[in-house]
Length: 436
Image (cartoon, rainbow, N blue to C red; front, side, top):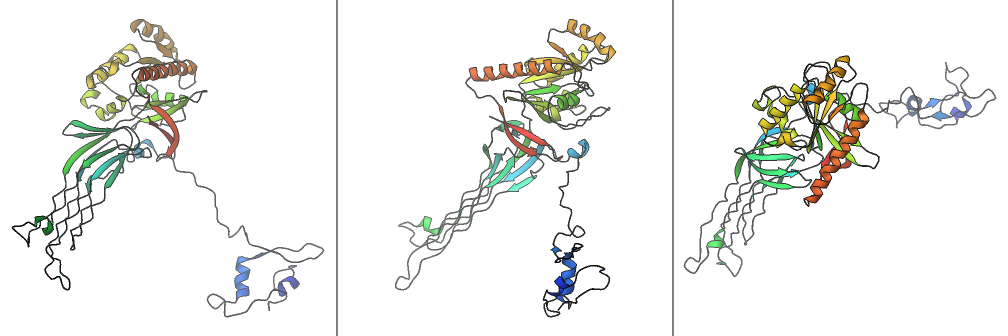
């Protein structure tokens, strides 16, 4: 029986508590009575002034845990480079085939049953598989070994084949061997056999003939295929923002989409390509990629070099971002086209538009008419910082996208579309991916 009143509780009621029957010992933890354990987990409530029964609360704020969802910590651009990998050298070896069995069948009343060794199982293949949930090649290991086949058993039992080993790679992965492209995994679920497994060995049952009625020969399994492959990831997007460092590409992508690339007042702020999705009222979506800044001699692997020039290859139209505040901004456009053409012929001839950024500055408004006189490409002057004239860019971006769709349909091919499956990257930022 609990005590009628506890010292130090003041006006806490005791009659209602006294009616609770708990054993003093035997069921407690560590030799403590259960009524003392009840005081630790149950929080008594004060009775009203007019009297009443005492109630207990099982949700004590003092003991409850903080169940609020923690926000993901924002990772800097430099730390993000450890998670984003766009090239990888992989050595793949197929599984070895199982050995052939060598045995003779024997049972009561049939001692000489003949050879009964089964063939060994085939080795497993190593297969590259494109997966839309993968965002980089960071999870790809430098070496993969296929599963081996099992040895053949007696009673003509064949060994089990080795299981296939699948390596998940993101969409847009190009597989190269000795500098030659051997596979291009651009669609979800597309597979490429990187290394074939070896064939299983033959058991002595295979060598049974009229000349040799009791063969003791069995062959070992063949080794699997061994290859050294180079995997390269090329970002899939409709349009690509191309420009020199500090031209305002990342700020422009933040202004027209929900992507959050790093923005700062020093060059090479963006070290990884970012893809932003531009939404329209008719539910059409256009993907725009922010390519890290290029410099003179990028095709010779200077600066960030060719590590990010490959991401421009899959862009169907280009958006040249030019800083109007510098002197002679048309020189930037000429240098950009030269670098693209030196990297790959015909890359600079794709549909394009010139975006004159930083129009909010006084010097930019002076250089704008001079730029239009020097080039014959459409120039859209805007400010990514203040948002001036972004509507013209969005309208022209839709025109470039519609022209691309019509071109692909006239060729009998399906254009690249965005789907609405989101994936969280290392920064906790939702990204959308492309598919056919």
